[in-house]
Image 1: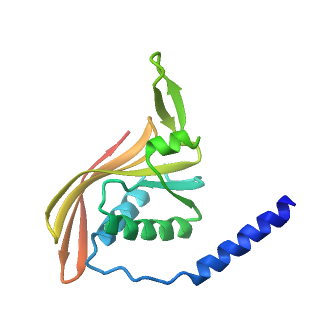
Image 2 (image 1 turned 90 degrees about the horizontal axis):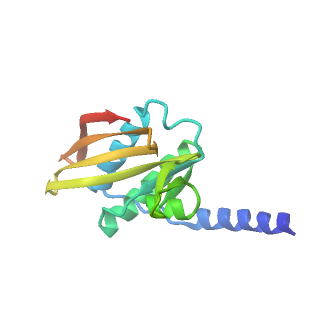
Length: 170
């Protein structure tokens, strides 16, 4: 019975995916710049991004339109790297059991390690105007396994240019 249900789930998922409309994302959308930053940080992650099952992204910082567009791009990137995409916050990953925790004496749970994945987090968004912004991005595997940096993006002639201006490793 489980095999039949599993097969039906896979077939229905394939049907739904094939029926989805490809919605092009405007090249001027900042989602493209954020995706370039993710790709750069992932490629330069000093081994944190290897041997994982999941790629998670906390997109709560973004407005609805950017969040939807970036989520689509990150999901495509995850699948291209043979990873399952999770759009979740750290708290949601902990609650769902993806991230290991330590319990403090006061009962608070502190995230310690994402055994089967990595989490991209965004902070300190500084928008100059529609064509220029800066943001901090981190890639977290665990308390002793993370990397990140400050990125700047500029839109010129419908093309985003992204520069990493600082980088850190923990």
